[in-house]
Image (tube, rainbow, N blue to C red; front, side, top):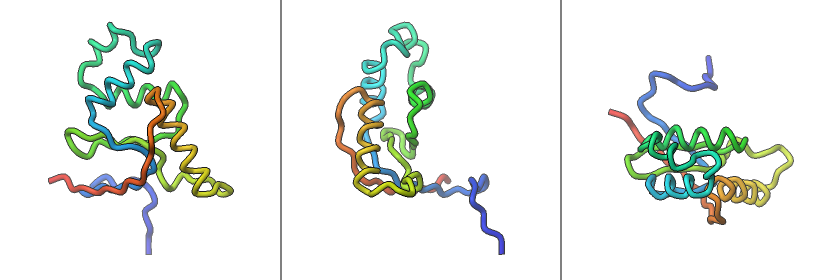
Length: 123
């Protein structure tokens, strides 16, 4: 029996479990552009337009955060630490605190994190 551990490219169903936030994509974009003006100045914001995927990816990469992000629906963005990334010697409380710290660093303000598990099907 074979077990696939990587991404299944022909799957039309996606799921995730994170400790993080779920927020309206426009609100996330507003917070990111405000929190990181040195990464995206006003001219960049016009160039970026509605490409929140590129903005989130670029800022997470530049800040060297371990966050994952998901856009399963048109209006919502899920950002947080994937549950599979808990350290071997890390308690649940420490993992939650790490998620809180990274999400807050990303958004530029202290935000409460929670558990999110979602799945959706394309098609």
